[in-house]
Length: 459
Image: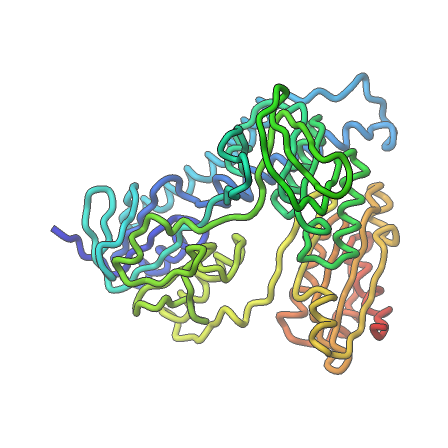
């Protein structure tokens, strides 16, 4: 017997539950299938637990700097990692529980726990049942990628998922991968008390960012005692009496690093491998991502892919925007498109990096006439008052239209202050509009009008 629905949502990440709600409100009968945990990556293995750990690490870091703020530490700061890990786990469990209660209370939505697998384009098997619907929405997210490094199958290793189960302070954590996820874990565990080495195959950390941003971040991490090893073209792993030996470089520095634990933080892959997409005729690329058009439609009519699995965004906020696009187009008669979305994200080291739009390198490559403004964070009163003056602000604008093309704010509150620039870019007005705003003092954002007033032609 096949149960008939108006829509099937596969995956309960950031897009799926909210889409299910909108469809139910529109009078549809909806089935939502989740194979493991409601809430997807953000709630269970991403944003919420990791940012909770970041907060604990920040608290320990500030406590160690007590004398700088006028109080005396009575001995070294001790980290109880079991309590730290339990706090993060509780944040996740509470959020997952609330989401489950909300979904199961939703009249018209049937929550099915189990693996979903396509039998044909519009028939899905899940938890021993066969379901059918004319519209199917795939929101299955991704998981950490395990690279095919020499020796990787012969040694124990951690990923960003299993790292959340660590309830002890590793003696020496070697992080393979110098990008966003790896750097967040590197700094937090250094602040918990681990010796930390970051191994990056590229020429510099977070190679997608501008060189000045990359170098500033490397300096921040190195000042905290993190060893950064770039140009690591020959990474391999081997068992060692003291843990795991990581072969780092053939050209410079000591050729190997011996860590008690190794974290592999080298990207993610989509959870599409076991959905039976081929039986539905749904196309995937070589890495398993589902290609979609500007409205998030797959090659099969009526089937959509949202969130990390469609390669059109790798963040919680882009997944949520995928939901907004699909709901607006299907239910509100609008014509929302992915291409209208401005790229925004943050790196949650301390201080954080807030980013929007293109990098300076990308803007220069476009051949446009540019205006560029920069200001150090030690010019921000709020940063000085908090004794957190590392980093800088940078804005790139088109010289003709005065539209902002991109910006970076590396510094205290950078992940929040960047939103003023995000709003101006989405409003599609000249940066001079923001230049003449009157910001609140003392805030990080108050330097932005000054920054915009100092824009100069790119040399």
